[in-house]
Image (cartoon, rainbow, N blue to C red; front, side, top):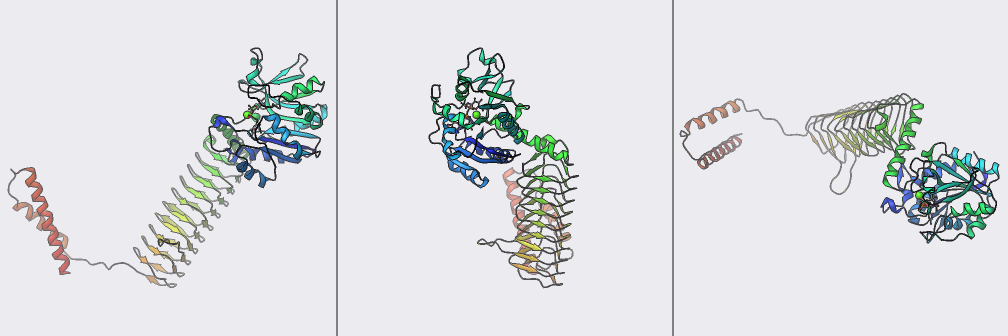
Length: 500
Ligand code: UD1
Ligand code: CA
């Protein structure tokens, strides 16, 4: 596809009142991208002479998204209608292009192939304008295509101006057109705001061209879905669902398996390799890259995650901006917050949280840990409940653990701290000093066993209960007695401790 004699004008200055949003309409997202980015991507595939966007409401926010995409910006201020918007683009277009494809920034489902087909028909038919129309079961709200008895296009009538007879017409104007610019400009100069909105309607140019004897064509979109706009939140949800469905279909065709595909959300830029299985409720977001032969189980959410071949994510894991090498295993219920690198065959189990941490090859942290700002070598075992105390109240500090280290259960590593290769840490240790390679570190209180202590205590308790006077006392008295017993037991305990 290449249209060197054609420019593209994206109309995106309007307000989008019906979304009831403080965010620009065209920046609302569907399929994981801002609406207008989908439009720009389709336009770029046409390789046109230029892409110009007319912006107005939230101009700064919209421009910030468009400029990095290489789109030329034109400001329309105030917004006086679609015809006025097109007039604003005139200077930017100059005489660079003979034709223009014009389309709204909020109809993101249109395909490049459809735009190219419209442009091709437009050129071939020597029409002054070609409209992309669609047949809708519920055409309310759209401008309608009025045709003459011979089938040629007569005019576009806005919904608010329809006569009762015209209301039944179900061929609608998608607001996507091809124009021959030399014929369009003189008409736009003659537009008048005689309508309920006091705006200059681009649609009025159609009747003007016809009155001059020009021919106007209409290409009926093969798939009406492509021209869906996003005027309401319900429209947005419907359009999002179409993108999700398209993406899933594309991936399944490329060899990805899905269970209950309707429950799976995959953003536009995500890639997934063949023989990977996605279970119900999985979300693959952002720029995630999933390899071949991976399994991502129920309810897991991956955002900007690279996952190499054969990796496994068990149910309900949440992973952000991280790298999972081949054959790593994660979860269930794991949380990789950000900047985690798990090297080949590393495993992370349930209720483990990682942040800015490297886990070496084959290293395992299987239960109930927090590892943050840590670098852990290969072949190391991180015991259940191990915590890196990486935050000292002021700043984050690193923990460095070598290869083939054994970290006992419930170890606290008070960072900054280093543990050398092959070291052992005894369970329950609070490690505040570096541990040399191959050493054993024990940092916990010594255990003392008192032979017979428990049995003796039970005998004393039993004796105290026997001495107690027989029932017949008020509840208040019984409370007093039991408080007394507690006090006596505490006194005994203090005596025992002193004797140690
Ligand atoms: C427009 C068409 C209608 C068509 C419908 C399809 C006109 C008069 N009507 O109606 O026939 O069926 O689209 O969705 O064109 N815009 C500007 N500047 C403005 C006004 C609008 O840039 O001053 C942009 C909007 O941001 C939007 C597009 O033009 O992207 C269409 O405007 P909108 O207000 O949505 O027009 P509709 O009433 O939907
Ligand atoms: Ca609209």
